[in-house]
Image 1 (cartoon, rainbow, N blue to C red):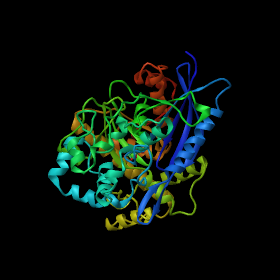
Image 2: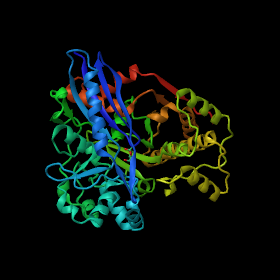
Image 3: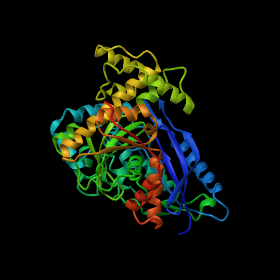
Image 4: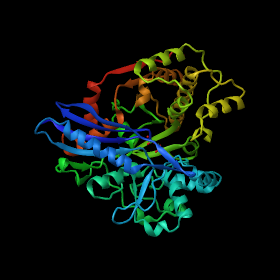
Length: 476
Ligand code: LFR
């Protein structure tokens, strides 16, 4: 089997990367050819993504990937994944007709409260879509746009989620991909098509969407980049979390719980069936989809966003691996926090100062705020660990399954305090992998579509054999 070169475009809410994947002798090696920061910006009271800036970075990264190829090698394919829920509204010519908002924009708060207080509608929407009422849902975002700017219904012909939009810019084809569509709260939980009741409820025009395609669909050749004229654009699972889950070197028996730890902590598992009903709704289980149409019920626990934002309130913060290690060691020496953070509090969504928001919640709960950055790190890791463990317990209760390990990938997998806190709270081992989960899952789907690997199960088997892992046994 010849060597295959593919590129993963992996856009996260705080940073983006273009990674060159080289598949040879059943082994995937990665070369990060381009990395850039990403952030949303406020303009007046709203928050927007700089999509033109992201597109420029994507192009720059693809050119670097092409330049990094050995002589005579060609880039077979490229795939795009991004964070969930955000979208571009375009006309038939693919022209943006509305600015691209960031999901932390507070514009969804009234809709969130309204649905939250309308029990019957909440249950109906959950039964229809399998997605709980969360501030970032595309449903609430689109409901707000249509209500605030009704003319948009005439201007926009398509709603493309961000991976769909980048796929369009690359290939010229407009499609909605299933995994990213499933983050919208507009997809029918029992089929792979849109939910009419949900679209009607949120007053979202049905003609904005087409039946979602499955991951693996070939979209055409890259246009407008002569260096990549023979490179195919392949629809991978457009949702970064779906890619990260696909990369989990899981045991085939279903005994592993998955934790993708980054800006968010996504705790979940793979299933042939959605997890629905009152308890699932109360536990805010999101029945998102795998690229092939199966389910990945998960709970979204506030993640390392807490730490990223808290660090902004400190003049001195770690820059290198060594400085990180020193901070973690300092945090480990501190006593366990007397009181953990409560996450079902919207004060952590997008506060002007995270440190102030944390301190205020602690004071409301009669606890003293930490004194330094190590103290916040300790508090945040312990609180996240408890959040991960509660999600595990809720899943076990609802499904009757018993999970034996928690597999962790993403930025948080390198944080031993977080891994240990999770193992201690959950009472089962946490296995961390030195793995760029989202990029690996993105590439794995391309390799399967290209016929270089039989299927994802085969890919995982090869991957598990080649990976270094670290096991954190529960100590408490
Ligand atoms: C992670 C993620 C989560 C999603 C959140 C918002 O990057 O995609 O899965 O819930 O971002 O889109």
